[in-house]
Image 1 (cartoon, rainbow, N blue to C red):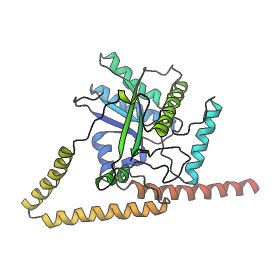
Image 2: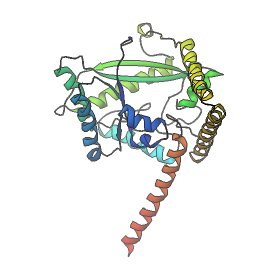
Image 3: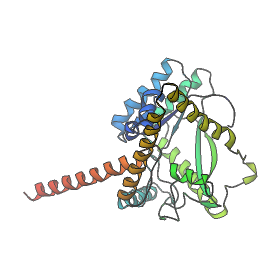
Image 4: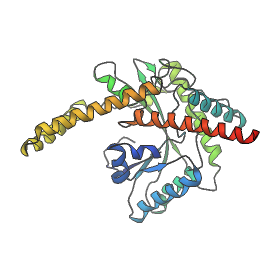
Amino acid sequence: FHGRTHQRVGFVCEGLIQYMPIVGWYRKLVCEDCFVMRSFKQDAKRITDNVESFHRTNTTRMIFLSPEGVVCDYGERDLKYINDCRQFCTEQGYEPFDYVLTPRYKGLTCLSKHIVHEMLNGKKGELMSTTIAYSRGGKLLNSKLLYTYPARQHADLYTIYQGILGEPTNMHLHINVMPPFDEDSDIKSIMMKDYERKNELLKHFHKHGHYPDPESYIHIPPNHFLLNTLFAMHFVVLFGLASLFGKAQTMLNICIGVFSLITFCHTIGNLINGGTSMESVPFETGIKSILIKFMAKHSQHKSKATDGDKFA
């Protein structure tokens, strides 16, 4: 799967991301990612329309999605969701998953049409299931779900950037090609069996420090020179153009302002969220933490009102 072919890439992600300043807006307006709200009745049409819009222009695309649909931290709300997933495993005849949540399988029926369309047009449409282990210093970061910090850590932007001055964070990919399925397939059983396999892979990694059969894996080192050169050239071009129009100081003030805003937003979110960072895009920790807090209070008020109606 490691090649140099250029490929249009899209993501299926939670709807909140599209409202994040700059990066979220760009993904919504330019990348045309598919944003879901975790309600299949609402999301089904949204997913189908997104897929069909690319089919109409015959645009080939690689779509990434996370069927588990959520990242669980260490709070009471997260613990409840983890235990609900473990209970669902038991109800379906599986041992509770220790390393992965249960997949949300309903929306995959709509996305499977993307693969079928590619194959009907003579293209190599494939469905690949990817398991990711993050490690630092030989230690698995995304370990058992019921572990707390520092035994379990989420690899977000800040976790990865820590490798600039400290121990680097390594990503270990295990890719498995799955047979295409359609709306007539038993998608729930297919996905539960696949997640059972993922759980065993991470369990093996946690115990041994690698996936089974480590000799079959290819090490792909990052091109630090190219990445740092592109990063530096970005600022050279940015400030070069600003200087050309006599706006170098203005550009510097904007950069300092954006940096300060991101720092403030992340710090506030970190405090609200009990010291947990969830920064997949800038501003996410702060905005999401505030919204979760607001929604929790709204839910409590609604619950109290409902209880009052029962006793009225």
